[in-house]
Length: 133
Image 1 (cartoon, rainbow, N blue to C red):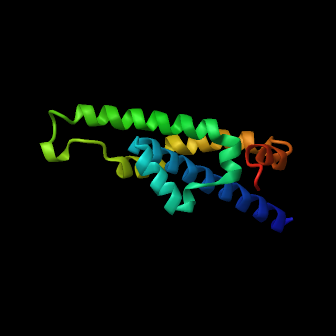
Image 2: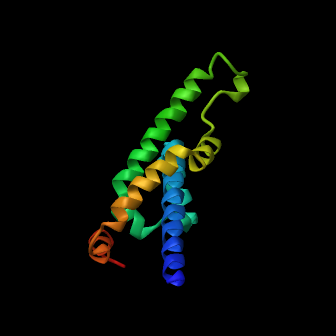
């Protein structure tokens, strides 16, 4: 029995780690808001591509990226009269790293794990969205 519990716990931890990383990647890519930069990053760094989670949670990752990008833009605008001119602008990596470690993302991940564990036919969902797999 202990092995089953241990295996299930690892499965949950793996999902949370992978989901949070995908949310972090979405935060970065939407934060840069530049198709040339994002296409270069995703071409070079394959860790930005997760066919299974991206197939199932694509809309959620887009929503996360857009929401965090808006927060970064607003923070950047607010900084105009409060910091030196050299410090004005979005701090994308810092914001996304803080988001990755946040209780907010932990809560989002927990909600989406509930969806994940209730999914049926994960393989068919992934195959529909990624026919080449």
